[in-house]
Every structure is written in structure tokens, then in C-alpha cells.
Image (tube, rainbow, N blue to C red; front, side, top):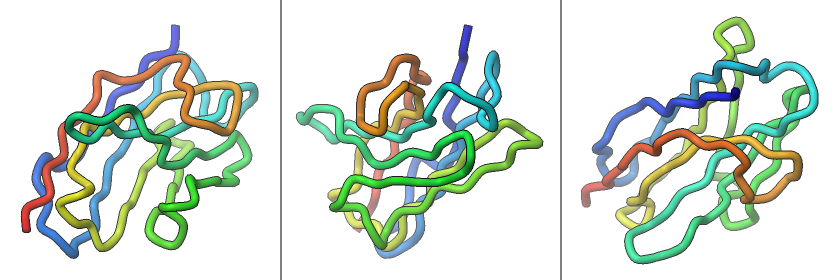
Length: 120
């Protein structure tokens, strides 16, 4: 069973960089078959795909996050980290890490989510 847990700050000031880490157990982020993903759900809206990283470390992002988001990995800790730069209040959301078999926002397994609020 794959388990994921998000960690990071619950409150970030506008213009700062948000950094969230996902700790994975039950599978290695450095081997096939999974793609490791970040998604978010703003208040009153549906789930939005942010981006993902593969077993080899390559990344892909939803176009609206290009240039502002990055995903890095620490394979020794089986963790991957989302950094979102220049945040605004519109980035306020519940952020989820998860996995899947395709490069999109579909999450086969996900963590419980972490509420992030961006203050202006």
C-alpha cells in the first residue's frame, strides 16, 4: 500500500515561495511504475493539477504554472518537493500529493492534503 503525507507551512505571505514536501512509503519514487504528482483544490473549485515528476526525475507542469513551479526529489528520503514562487492569495488551496500512471491530475493514491493560505 502506497502512503503519502504532505508537510509544509500552512500560511505564506504573498510574493514569497511556497515549499511543500511529500513523504512516500510503500513504493520508491525512483523506480517504475508511478508518476508522482501535486494537485490542489482552491476554495469552491475542483481539483487542479499542478505538476509531476517521474521515476527518472523529469518533470511536467500544467501550463499556467510553467516558470513559477518546480519539483525536486530526495531519493534517499523518498520525498519530493513542490516549490511555487511569487504566490498570491489565488494560490490559497488544499494541496495534495499523490501518484498515478499518467502525466495528468488523476490521483490513484493521495495524502490527506494540507491547507495553505496565502496572506496579502
